[in-house]
Length: 342
Image 1 (tube, rainbow, N blue to C red):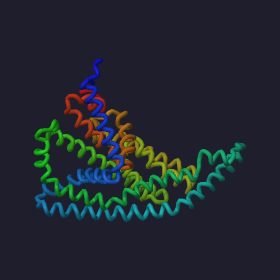
Image 2 (image 1 turned 90 degrees about the vertical axis):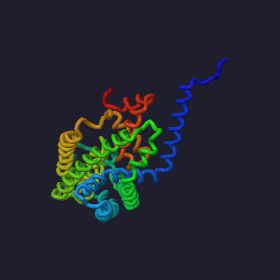
Image 3 (image 1 turned 180 degrees about the vertical axis):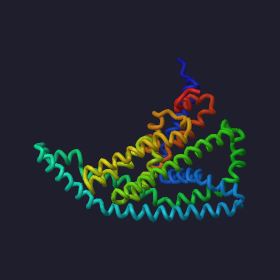
Image 4 (image 1 turned 45 degrees about the vertical axis):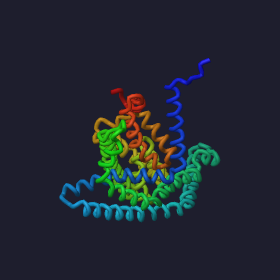
């Protein structure tokens, strides 16, 4: 009886086993890995102003100093605005929950005036104030947790930027016997830089429009909802829905169904104009990823790395795709992730 294992099968088993071990390790070390990955991608964005300062003839040491000071100031402003708003909002949750219950009573009375009898327990079953605001509290709380690591992330980003100038030489030495080449890494870097830069511009535009619009509509915590719209715009597919939910519910609680509909229409218009017209125009031919893979990557990286994984699901999947594209025996994985067969 031949008990020998097919070498191809053995290699596949070893590869899958190694992958499971790596993913399990990443899941256990998520509190360390997530801030580091977030810092890496902030550093990629920060390279644009750094290179712009170099082109203006500013010395390397002065340019990096300017960038470091700017990053700290942005971090402080971001922490102050978002941190105080989050604390105030979480403290106000019981008040808004009570207001929603009152609005439900008004809705039931309004329906009964038209001869539609609906029990309060039935309405509460589908519009549960406690569950609704618990969901919003979880979204805001996750962003608050991210904020607590902001200074750690900023420090890591600064050290990455300080190493940026010597990194090419190190990579040349590391990759001399590797399947990956420096050009492959440049492709990865360019793809990620272009995506993050465009996404950042579009997210800032989204956040500003949302914040200003909600402010003039009189919605409480308009700045907080604008910042959340900015951050969640990085999350593909469901980010805009997640961002619209708290602001729309707040409009319903404060002013009733009319203002609620106005806010929902506002978010729909922003998503259609920015998400379906402006952003695709600047992203050009697209990300090179299958729409199904975009959605599945959101679920996978979100499960693995939490909210940071949701933010970075597209860049991380793009990296995986490019890495597998240079391997002859694993190129099929890259093709599977792509939106077309090259």
